[in-house]
Length: 499
Ligand SMILES: Cc1cc2nc3c(=O)[nH]c(=O)nc-3n(C[C@H](O)[C@H](O)[C@H](O)COP(=O)(O)O)c2cc1C
Ligand SMILES: [Mn+2]
Image (cartoon, rainbow, N blue to C red; front, side, top):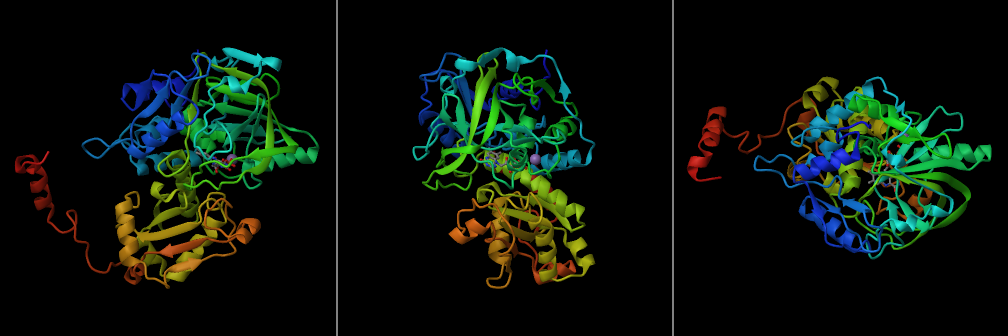
């Protein structure tokens, strides 16, 4: 027995996608070398159903790959369902909107954590390989882009580490490249929680006990890609989010616990002194740097997996892929929560997927803004102080403020607001000393080295909006006609001859 439902069981999630026609089983042989990546990229770029590769050249029979696990879908006739795969990660209906998803994520941030429950056994232990039987190359590990420096085992899995005092368990998504039969290599940045905990073990002079979970419960994967505050356990957040504790089993070799129904689990430790070249890889911002970098080596001592395991794969690059749909959405929720909690008049926050997690748009409630009786510079300073000082705000360099007449989840409206409301030379406020993620593509070498720079708040607020009013009225179907006329037109839409 194991827990069920799309949010807490990857197999159920996959079945739900297949049943909804939002995943396609592919039974002809597909090559993990570039073909998996090429199909997955085209799927993102055409908003096609997720590809389930059932036969992979060179891999043991039964080993499978799911591409684009949280790619966008083509919306249905009523304009809904584009976020269906993402919504399924949280057990939400396929027609959920970004706001539905964000409010659910934020409610769970304010609920009591629901810690995981330990179970004796689980599907992830159906196959256990130790010692010489550990061979990561037996899996269909894909070469995702021709410019990549290697094959990536971990593009949609999470690391499990725990502080030496046992007080803090961290689940976090980061990429991991195949380095050999029993080793992976990948980033563990000191500002990310895996890096902080890795440093705690270094101080103790012991290698960092580590596990990696692939084909995890989808809600757990999303939470592991969320910038919750330091010392917050992602596992308890997942319990609060889904309303049920995550079932976990003890690892074979150490005291870490992993979701019991995961598809694949790697167990081992992270080295403090050993590095290997990692990358380049096509990345979330849409570019490949063309260079490898030395990164820590992850040693795998045990591999456990379900029968016919499914490895989920993100082929990073131009939006929309999971760095935008999952990471961007989780950043939006965390950022919205810190801004609201600070009392700022922010109605919604959204990392436009099209902006590759390089900007976040904030919708400002102009009635509440007017009551604050402040000017643009003060609003901008307050937003920057709260956001750029937070774990979530470290990740996103640009912040765009717009009034709440704009639906910030609709990129067309955001572009319109920027084009018609932002005044060159006046409404851009730079914060060169704010710390930020060094991956942002336009940073100078000095900024990368110092970990600061390239951050700005751009205001698309009109001067009148600080007094609660707008300049002019918008000319559109929703705003330029009496409600009765809008309804009349909608009622007659088909009889006019439109479908
Ligand atoms: C598909 C995907 C890939 C990601 N890859 C990385 C990565 O390679 N390195 C990294 O530092 N963060 C990566 N992230 C973002 C982190 O998971 C995210 O910032 C998270 O908050 C980190 O966990 P932490 O806040 O507990 O440190 C990725 C997120 C997703 C959804
Ligand atoms: Mn964390």
